[in-house]
Length: 591
Image (cartoon, rainbow, N blue to C red; front, side, top):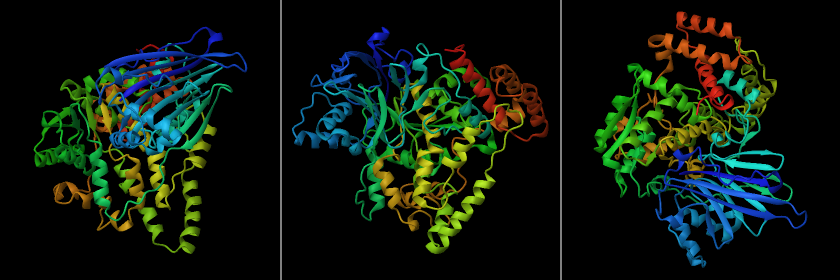
């Protein structure tokens, strides 16, 4: 896990930058490297400066030969953030084809694969990645993200400058960042951040996950080229064996690691796999976040699975005032506010891991989206059993009714109305309910998983910890789409294939729970009861930065009324976050 920066700047501008990674040491404290190249276009006489910079968090091959930017054959340059789980298998195949390796890193496997397979190499990778690769003999630079967008990659282009980076803060010293009004209002109103490839920042875009992009140095245009999703493979009927083998492959590591457990099915499976792995969790210890709201706590279930497996359990409890003091720093790392405060408590879990010497962690993100852990999957299940001549007309009728029921409601304290964003939400990102594979792809690629992965990446990397999400592999994605209904939902239990696979390995108390809460720490408990006055102060401090979007007096009155009525409205927590975000990135008052 690392951080990268890349720029293409016309030499005529006299401001080429060699490094874009000064602000992201947290992503890679083990090495900081940069290389600059000059490229001339014979046809036009134009000259460009291409700068590659990289922060390394060393997980495999700790030698200096594996540092990046990595140059192979004095021709191919790569910067890479992520981890390729099947790199040893690919390395063997490439060696049989004549490839010569000088490192044991997964980075060199990508380059050698590119030499032999071209852009098809991205279809052969299992794992998580953001990659920039250039053949110095060509006028095109290629960019790729893994199919699920586990690793971030953004870009900004203006005039004859193009920047690519892992975190927006890398541009703080280069660009005067401004607000994307539509995105900001959309978040305030709905609490979600699925902006397509847009962000909260004007002009800063996210590379779409699962695709290769090409930047043509001649035309200075960026274009989406092709998908990296691999072709369907024959999994066979032994789904449980395939699932277990693929999940286990992610546990190859040479650094101290641990597991974030919540007492739920998905993280318990990963804790079990950690117990079976050759390299056991660091100090035989796993971690959980404990809610201050006893009615919302998963502590007893986290204890259950760790006692079964014989692990030590570190319970991370977050004091409100510690939380409050860290808010600016957490916002600085997140770069995008969150829907729920519960995401913030992962920051303190990773902080605890870091203090104990952990360098890599595992979490269960993606299992619900792949195997039907959400209630919306039951709609698709229902339509699956209807004859087509009934199901298709009925789905179209319900689609119209649901679209009407999701009509726009504008919060009364908001000034700014985003008609463009509303159209995007209802016409382009509308949730599908009636086809199973559409439901899986929606939850995986549009919402909510992209939000969760963003939080996971930022909060773990804030403490220089690589967070792996083993369920999110191309092979498991293909398996999930092939699993029949009888292995998805049975006897009232969702994700039945997971429960079946690990039957007799994890106790039935964990396997057949139906009251899963996740890493819960309810903001309602803090805001409406214990610390309402403190949050009111935070609200007043941050409202002034959002005066273009919010009726200030209405917001203050609304907050007070919310506390009196004990009827929670999440918009006030969003305002606090956005105010801090504005101060940090637009006003540049926090660093």
